[in-house]
Length: 184
Image (tube, rainbow, N blue to C red; front, side, top):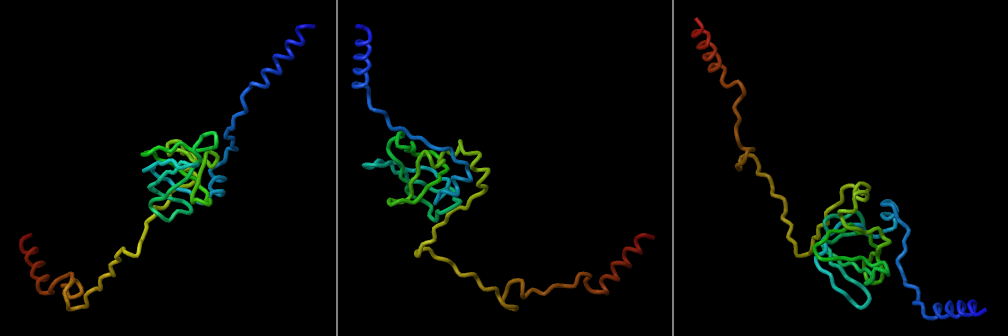
């Protein structure tokens, strides 16, 4: 009789002192197609800087190529600080294929978005194909107007005179006669 009470007391004590359950990131694995369709922006980029803010890790990317929703050469992406909150472990000088969504603070991504290092994204790259290189054109950028072609007689090939292919008929006849005379 003593054993059941002791067992019950031990079980209650263990339940009272056991740690609270840990939060963990749990995701449904997306296909490249599903991730692309659900994302607001899809790009390949190299992390140039990482900083931590109160609630997020912010990675600055230099965009290598983009497939959707990116029009700049550099951008910032937010991810939760903790991996248990589905945060990504961005480090400077690493390359990533990013599936991001737009939130209140700009672009954001996490473990469940299918974002991964480029070396682990072969299936994604096959699905996505070749991307586009984003080029920023600002108001300060000067665009040179196309050069006008020179009119005939003002230099350039338009003013060149071209001799007929066969040359002068008398010169051709003389050359033919010389060849026939040497054959004899």
